Length: 360
Image (tube, rainbow, N blue to C red):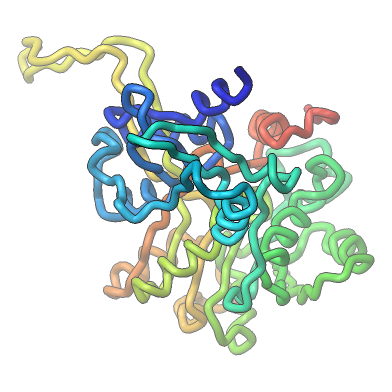
């Protein structure tokens, strides 16, 4: 019964839409689904399949059958447990379906059942990108706690949000970190001074917006680098983001969240003289929302004015108007954790399983 329920939780019909699949992945906190029709295996659908479809301009309302790949990895019931476990480990799969004759699902073997933990990001020698964290803001929306400690040190469980960000990149192989600081910078430097991360601090002497202080890194950064706001965490495949950025030869890539908004009412469409033309019952709309994480080429720093207030959205528009390449990499809503406001902070705590503390 337990195996049946677990198979059901990761199963999706071929007739489901891309947005259905995204919602299910977020609900079960997995990036892989089993496509099943009449209790028979059809294919596997990964978050990467959906991301590639969005990048290619596919609508989120299309059926997943339109994007299913043929080159998928499955096991068969004739293979030994050891062989199957090696497949899971080598390909770092969240689960692998084991098929018997006629595409019948014999069982599913989950990563955590074999290795007693959830699959973690794997360090790679290719992932050496520096990471820049914009940590100079006053966090006014998070008062009163930011009257005492700076926003980057607000705890999520047993460590502050800034440490979560650094740790997630450090696990992949990044070793060089930069932090733009201003408000209560001494507290930030003191906290991380006791840890082993290599962080260079550059001081924003006055508020310079979400990108203005990056001009201070001109000449220091000579390779592709990531930038993140200090109040967001994205749990997704950073290597895939970097590959997308490089393969498309982007000057800047913005990470975007696929947000789904549902209107809980029937909507009416009319002509200019008030005649009904169409009705839609509880329609939903999908948007790509700026997530607060970016990938930049070092030459882009030349496009940031010196010692002026300048938002990164202004930089994106400037590059676009100069016919430079600004890419957008989509991630699911469930991969994005925002602590910029109290309701979002408490929601992130809940979704991360950190309900032991609630700040309001």
